[in-house]
Structures are given as structure tokens and as C-alpha cells.
Image (tube, rainbow, N blue to C red):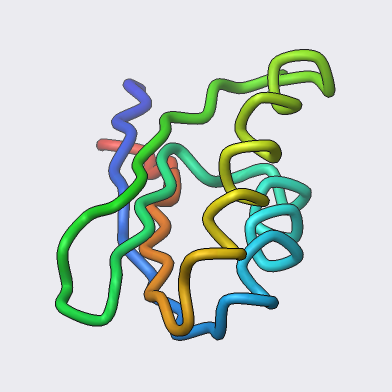
Length: 89
């Protein structure tokens, strides 16, 4: 049996002060492959991939960038590309 990895997307609408806490929550879940943050005009303002086993040292610059974004943004959409492993028969 082969393992085929598929992904799906999930979106969250958040206010500027909720962005950082939501990104941390998504990362903590551990199944996110990529996070995209879009502004109110649906334009991508930040995008970063997540690797399996990312540690605090790797995530610190991401959190700093997202923290800066929270000061500038009023409302954003966070799009999360998640991993789904399905067995192919």
C-alpha cells in the first residue's frame, strides 16, 4: 500500500489583534503545511510554509513577522493548507 498525501484548505476571518494567537494555535495543532494571510482585499500579505518538526528557534522569526502584521492589519483571513494522509489501495 502506498501513502498518498493530500491537502485541504481551511480559512479563518480574524481581527488584527487575534492574528498571532490564531497562527500559534494552528501551528500547535501540527497538521498545517502552509499558512497564508490575506488582507481585506483578498491580497496575500504573508505566506510561509511549515515543516514537520519545526521548533521554537525556527518559528521565532515567523511570530515576529506576524506580530508586526497585527499592528498594521484590522481584519485578515488566514488560509491554512493542511496535510491529510489517505491510503491508496
